[in-house]
Image 1 (cartoon, one colour):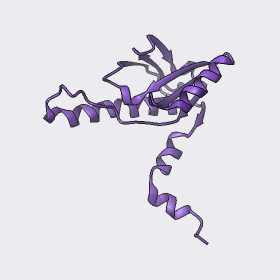
Image 2: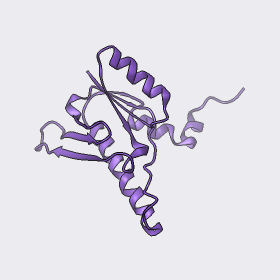
Image 3: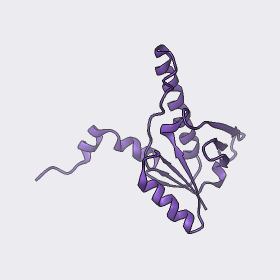
Length: 145
């Protein structure tokens, strides 16, 4: 089994879980979205599926870990924390917003591609989207006593 943990470098809980899983023989990849693209690079290769075929296979290369991992290897995704990428302070201020938007879209698209194939999710993408909408939470919350 292989687990992908999407988190940030300061998340001690994600690191502790990764350590425990690795100690039990699980393969674990930590993907720190906050560090992209400043502290690590990533590239994406999509092997397109034909009509009616299985969903496309995604290969993500994380430079921080110096290894590739493919979506076909990932059994579990823990969407722990999803932080906005940080644009380089060396960019011209007029380019900062564009760079952040593009980096964020890369992360969203990659997670979306991972979500297309059946696998076990902790904090599934749709559930996380609902949880991030406070008004929707208030609608389903029980009335206060």
